[in-house]
Each structure stands twice: as C-alpha cells, then as structure tokens.
Amino acid sequence: MNWLKNVLIDLAVTALIAWAVFAEASWARWIILIYTPLMLLLKIVAAFSGTLAQLNRKSDAAPPGWFFHVLYLTNVVLLAVGQWWMLVALWVAIWILSVIAERRSISTIKAK
Image 1 (cartoon, rainbow, N blue to C red):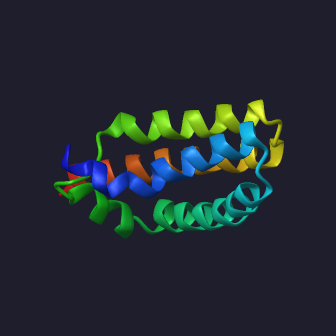
Image 2 (image 1 turned 90 degrees about the vertical axis):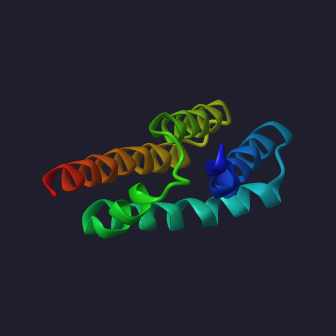
Image 3 (image 1 turned 30 degrees about the horizontal axis):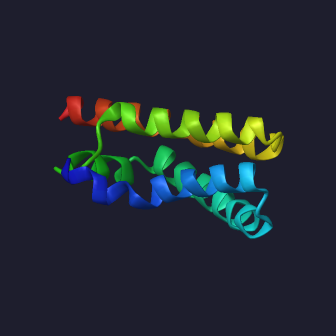
C-alpha cells in the first residue's frame, strides 16, 4: 500500500475527469485539455526510451500492474460518457503506450 502516495496525481486526474464530465466544469475541462497532451508526450518518451520505464519498475513503491489499466479504462469510459472523443483517443493512446513501456521494461529486466 506504500504505492498509493505515488499515484495521488493519477487518482486526482481521474477525479477531475469525472468532475468535468458530470458537473460540466469548464475549468476542469481546460486542465484536462492541457494535462492530457503532456501525459501523452511523457508516455511517448517512456515507451521509446526504455530508461524511464525501467527506473519506474524497479521502485519498491510501484503500484501493481493492474492499477494503471483500471485507471486508464476509467478515464476512457468517463470521457466517452462525456462524448469527448478526441480526449478518448488520446487516453487510449496513453494506455497503449503504457503497455508498450511496461512490456519493454519487463523484457529488459528479463534480459539482464
């Protein structure tokens, strides 16, 4: 459970997405519109550099493998409910890049 403090931002973003979809808060939508491309950029770097994913995986306080899949699925479903299709596509891309980064880090660890 030590990993919970390391995922507070991710949980806050999911809560913010829910707030933006159901309360139709425009300020929350703007935060999501800014955060999502930055997150996508980070995932692109992580997926294709390998170093970031490897460092993250070695951490003792890393969340379980299923956690981010559940979180990204929740974000995609919430955004689909709000019919924000471009953001849905970006979060699906983030999810796919996370899987690529995870598999690369696992294969790198097994190769050593």
